Amino acid sequence: GQQVMQIPQYQHVQEGEDFTTYCNSSTTLSNIQWYKQRPGGHPVFLIQLVKSGEVKKQKRLTFQFGEAKKNSSLHITATQTTDVGTYFCADQQGGSEKLVFGKGTKLTVNP
Amino acid sequence: DAGVIQSPRHEVTEMGQEVTLRCKPISGHNSLFWYRQTMMRGLELLIYFNNNVPIDDSGMPEDRFSAKMPNASFSTLKIQPSEPRDSAVYFCASSFVGGGGAQETQYFGPGTRLLVL
Image (cartoon, rainbow over all chains, first blue to last red; front, side):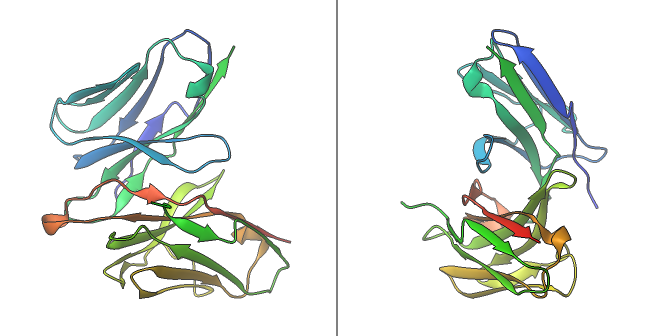
């Protein structure tokens, strides 16, 4: 079945540094959703990208969908300790209610 | 809105025992998903329902796992008999899926942390 690859698996940064996680697929992605899971918590929806080349911003977070719809990225500018958690991308398989999740990128921020 | 409700929040049981996890989706949502999360395998979809009907159970590990959704406001995931390798966090999520399969966000419950000794 479809696989959504996410890199890196782990990322440790100093507070104030930027952070980027990448989501890739060998097949065309349908709609990409991004979720954040705090330690000990549950995944929480951040945003959905639908259109090729789409860019959306939420304060310090920038989400991008590749032109060929085969990759997506999440960039955090000037990380804060509140950004700690695991960030997942998920693709809605075409025509299905099913979401295929990447393995996530675990972000730790050193104050 | 109370969000997705799961119970119990924690479960410790012995190998061979039956385990039943419960989920109440958000009112008005028509799709319900059961996920399992482990360090090794990440977040895996086990099964999902649309309008109370199981649509895809290809992620269910084996016959020891079963899920039901008797009505729009309740679902169960049962493991019988349980084994140590079933230890994981089990999440229930719900969403509203409109015409043409357009899906809104999935809302996850707090999860059930299961430990099988």
